[in-house]
Amino acid sequence: SFSTGSKMAAEAEHGQKHTAMPGYLDMASKVYTAITGYLRDYEGAATLHDSVKDVFEYGFVTKADLSLLVLFAAAWTVVRYVATNYGFKPWGKWAKLPKKEQEKMPESAWKVLFYSMSWLYTSHLLLGKGYTFFQDPASVWTGWHKGMSIPGDIYALYLVQCSFYLHSIYAVLYMDAWRKDSVVMLIHHILTLSLIGFSYIFRYHNIGVLVIWLHDITDIFLECTKVNVYFKNRGGKYHAMNDHLSNFGCGMFGLTWFVFRLYWFPLKVLYSTGHLSRVYVPYLPFYLFFNVLLWVLLVMNVYWFSFIMLFLFRVLTGQMSSVDDIREDDIETKPKKTGTPETAVMNGSPKIKNGPNGPLENGNVKQDNVNHDETKNNVIKRQRPKASME
Image (tube, rainbow, N blue to C red; front, side):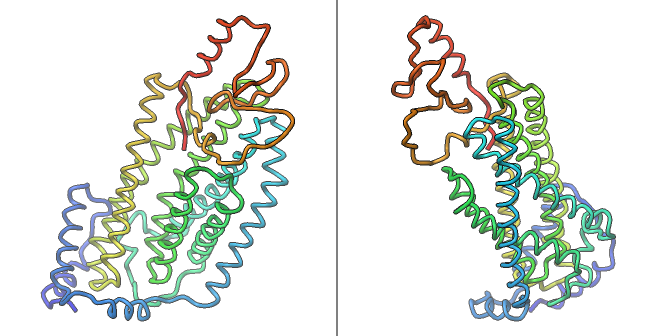
């Protein structure tokens, strides 16, 4: 329960017009005041019994919801299988991509397709359907009550997102090329599914739409960049257009990351969940838990942005020659036992087989008819550092 003074203050502030997007300091100050007020007003520490009670009192999910979730996850798996085997893989073979790129390109192409459609649909909801969650974050909490019905168009978005990440968990284990960071991706998908599911069950779907919209756009540019990295050396030739597109995509990836995840996310989402929620819903179930998760997400975004900036700095200062994808060397597959040995000369370069370059010995090209100094110079050129896209 909350003190009478806090309730009166909330009621007095409820009718005031709130800033659509405050400054960083104003946001941090108001959120801090709201959280400390919540801790002060809540009488007694919440017990495990209280938390379980709140789950059953405020959480709403039906068997039909769960059935549709599993059904759509299975549908995503089938759709991806068809798209990969009858679209993306033939495309890679037709373009004569190196073998490793042929293995990885379908995954990125699939993600470009999904995130593009999902983000465009979410943009339609926020900018074309009359929802004002982005323009006016206070509207997120207008009329909120436990067990409130979810509009059909928002329900569709949640069904698509939850089922996609449930499918993605299966895909990492059984469909994607296994990499050294696959465990991290698996954890990411589980956490994302949990967060989206949590916001659905407790009817925080309005703020959930905004969070999804602010995060999906960066994935579009990331995966587009990867696809162009894979295609820039197709057919054994360098293609400048794909190289330029990968550089452009890399720059847009960094720009959208800052604008959407580090500017709008804290000033729209965290301001709304931390401060405005206390004004419109003085007792919001799992208020602290909900906000802690979102602040952790912000910390992760800041942490990864530091790597993005370092990466862009190295590319712009010429410390790295081009955008590349180092994850290809992280694919953990058992060496194939064939009659024709092969190896990768270096990370990012196509495999070289027996042929004009001569036989391979211990991973090195043996060239009997080529001057040793010339071969050494070629190897040095191959070892020029390249920027990496993860």
